[in-house]
Image 1 (cartoon, helix red, strand yellow):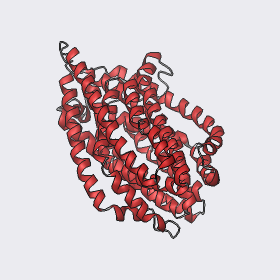
Image 2 (tube, rainbow, N blue to C red; image 1 turned 60 degrees about the vertical axis):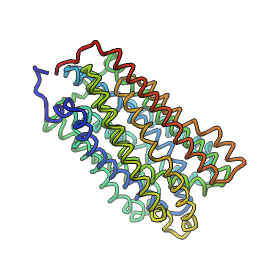
Image 3 (cartoon, rainbow, N blue to C red; image 1 turned 30 degrees about the vertical axis):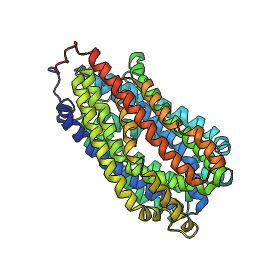
Image 4 (spheres, rainbow, N blue to C red; image 1 turned 135 degrees about the vertical axis):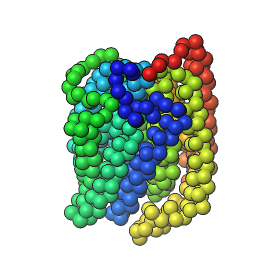
Length: 460
């Protein structure tokens, strides 16, 4: 990049792999922690509306996850492609890809919103949300009107991460989370808008949180990537580069959503909405515990993609194995802590009178699930590595395997067994799935590195 001045963030991205992972991961972990705390508090406020409202959130989760998945799919695809170009020293193509990604994001958000507004109600009814459909639709009607806020916010954060600006990405995420925390009780209870207020609080928070990124890109103009909206309007090569990872990444979120839907149906048939509420509450806790792995995985994408663009596969391996070591140690410590504090964690969802009876059930589910928490990072990190190498379909395959390996027997156990039997089965499959995937990932990484050993790294 002799012809282009690089920022300190880009220097970090292209520097020592362990330092790059730490510098990228820590701000993202902090931001995601705030985001998850926001999700927990949001669920706590909604649970104050009653058991039906909390159960509605469980049914809504797959639909929300699909929305996040499609928006993040384009964002991850763009981030990986931009970082690869930065690693290869090709700033022009990096900026072209960023501009095309913005156009694709806006178009996709509009089309997706229109479609979901029409199909959301029958979809909710099909997955068993009949008794809580009114709560579901109150949230949905607002969420998809403002879905473009999810898409733009995710893209801006990803472009910043692709050039190593993890701290700025953190600012956007934390700003949105804190604002959402403030608006939730005002919109839900102060204005009396209930579920619709929860959705509107999220949409407003994400919209306002995007403003700093707009200032950095278009007013201050101190980012490495210059984002030029509408230039080009469409570029087939850049679109393919984004979608090669983006489309499989979107389908990953959809696959997870479908798996959650199927588990909700199994649980509903076994023990009704109560089982769905327990499962949903437990996984909200686990999503908080998984933040370090998710943050490390998010750091892997730009760091390893840049090394891949520079054809430095020893750096790719060093970054990945260092990330795996960090993830396993961190998750083991957190699993032990959560096992000890399970009773306290369950209180978050059982403070209201009609939820108090579920305290012991939620606590038991949390303790059983602690057995698989140290293994969850394997799947997350593997998907991130595949995405950084442009292997979107392999990332999708690993996600599908990890999430659907537990469904068939869970169905059988749900028919003949107790709810506790289902919890133990889920724990076993959440250990086996990620373990198989990480072995596959290491084999692929070693094969790619060996095949590319004769290619000298690109000097940037």
